[in-house]
Length: 410
Image (cartoon, rainbow, N blue to C red):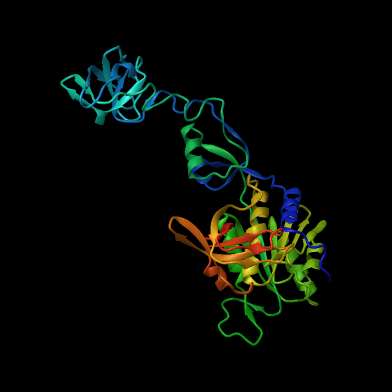
């Protein structure tokens, strides 16, 4: 078996964009049970929020012009004409030279156009001394200023975080239509792989830690997971277990194969699951070159390298993109990044994207990325790191002090 034409990182992201489509299954969920689900239908406001002009402070509703010139040394004077109670309509108007007390969140009475904070005035038996002038609209939220009737509040593909749920609740929405939760399956392969609970290893054996790290990432992305166990390097057994797991899930992840070993059946197994099959076999990236991406009858299949650190980096870069697209989530083409300055020179081969594990250190108000040097198979390099620095294929390395993009891993 030979590698197909190796793809660049950019080509791989483009292929994922072109080939992976969201699931179509939706469900209606109560708002309190919709956290982290993906909105399947856009939401348009049927009313204003707030529904009336309201005060943002405790203070007095006034006509702004009546406060002009007010200061600590030369206060203005207004007559207190009444007050507005919380939860009640303002049934009193503000005339020139008058002020009406309004609590935070209270309705603004007719005739007023601003609120002077209680700290900037003093009520002396119905005579209000104003020690600061206010501008029209100051300390007031107008009706519809937060959400306006007819406005699209949330688009399809929006992840429902607590703040989105709050916005929906403010509109009186009790149920939302969302895409159902994804389910992914994971299968480890290799004669040398044994359960991680194995206490005494025989010569050549390796504990299966990838299923914990990879499925742990999937769970962090709020995806249900199914662990299919470990399969030996036997085509019939591998194909049978892969097909059984494939039929239960929305995306199948295989780890331990994808290289060019004589007993590596990963590509053949993936091809047997359905058309169109493999669309990426090898990525010009370090670590993680022996990566397989495929589509079998509409379901993505991901073949990860066996080395733990390589598997995690590849899954973070490409697996997350695939799964978020599959969920129906609107995302950018690349993962979220921050920028930091690199602490030392790092060489890189041109034509290949390199991903260097780094520890983030703050120095004098700036983030610095300190490379953690280690071979791609060392899981401890990820334990010690806060992120991954990307060196794009067009560059031959990065220089000390250069600002670089860092993909957060914590």
